Image 1 (spheres, rainbow, N blue to C red):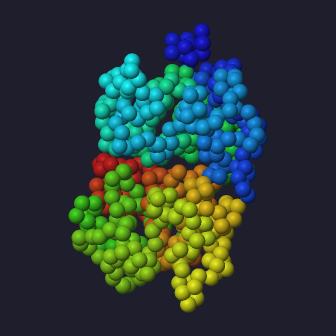
Image 2: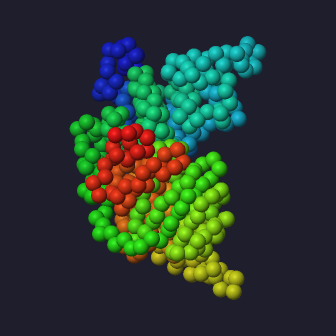
Length: 515
């Protein structure tokens, strides 16, 4: 019996090793001007198995995905689907070969219905060649029901769905063409814990259908939960592969970064001074109410809470991005009432947003211009920009953050997520602030880049800067914070010193569970 059919019939367990991969790459290379993105890489994806693709930002993962989906063509190497060599001439060609991708931000059409998204480009037709709308809605509903997503109405406009359900629609689209190879690129980045569990149930369903799944994630708990195999890329090369069950996390980390990362969080000797920022009774009509806390000189103050707790909204108010209805903000002994972001920046408060791609960098501009943008008064003379000064400023701060780029003239949009984050942090540090607010500073970046950001945070507070760190990652909160403020439903639920603090205590406070 054919392997996929055997999986559906239950004769093989999902994850069973099979002789022939559904998709294989060998000797694949790809270069861009000044950048070697991939060199002689190999990868194999097997039916009924999840292969995790692991690597630091800039390791070549995104380039590989674009090659597999027909967006880029490799300079060298071979791609085989079910044993046959193929040349993927474009996205539609890859789609016809049964290859589809589900991205962190779903590439679907908000103004079309669910059914239209599922069957876009291959809608059922009537005998005279017109779209058979009734058949399309019925078939879309059948696909959704088969994959356990029958709660989604095929007639619903896509924009009315949440991110998790949009992922389900993307999978339904793959199922509608009987896609054999499904690429999941950071699919859990914007999902809640419950939604992640539902996505993993869907992965199990796809494995049972005999699909070969490529799963890209920086989260080791996810990789060890659902992946059968792994492949590690480093600096555009394949440096390791194997079975997840037979390999320790430390071994995989060592492959990723070329060294052991025994201590993810830096050793710190906090030198905390007096109060720098005092927030008293800060309120917003709808987002948060009577929020009070204190940040001290040289301190990392962590903010933890579940989705919708109001953490980012409070930070945006302090940064002058949203208004408040009550309360006060005192910085270095002076009361401030920022009405704009510029007011907060002038006072010495800068905010590194969670959505770095849309709010943090200016895509299309080079790295050095992104870094110098808020500091033009320092890099210009008599109203004329001095290019040498812009480069000097950018070089000073990007070198401290170990930015990986071919040059400072490189378009910031071509950088990996982790390196874009470093550019955003460098941009605001160049303004010489008193206080920096980091909102999910390591979201979606790899373990090596996380370690660089954490080390730099430690360096900043040693120099006397104060840091507020908003994070949903418990290890990061516990590993980096001197104190932790927990928010729940727009209010401060508790404040803890970090000494002896554990994850269970934080989660209980965030969820409102009485011990």
